Image 1: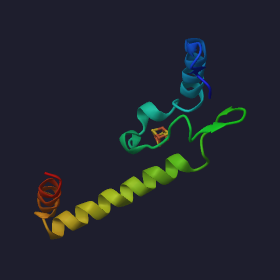
Image 2: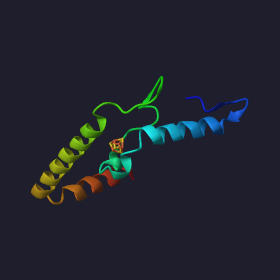
Image 3: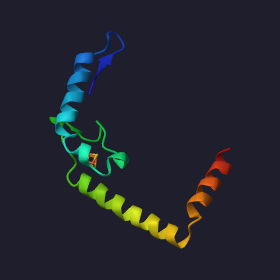
Image 4: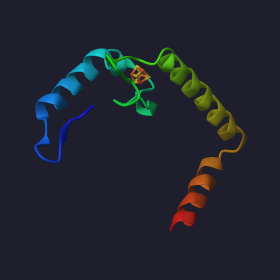
Length: 96
Ligand code: SF4
């Protein structure tokens, strides 16, 4: 998806067309999606030679994965309520 070059700079017309096509073909159902904040779909992952296309089954798989992951995390926290605090404290001590 060329959006310009070093000689002439950014091609804002091309950029606008890319964004419009992405919004039209990919983002139709995203506003109501309960896993949108975990979604990894980007321009590069859904671009094919002839335009933007969803990867078959991606949305359902992500929603199922997110549901299972939330269930696992909840189960772990029910067994060990201090787990999240311990993990974050360990993390911030390690990076500081
Ligand atoms: S999972 Fe699918 S519907 Fe949800 S935000 Fe990502 S692309 Fe959109």
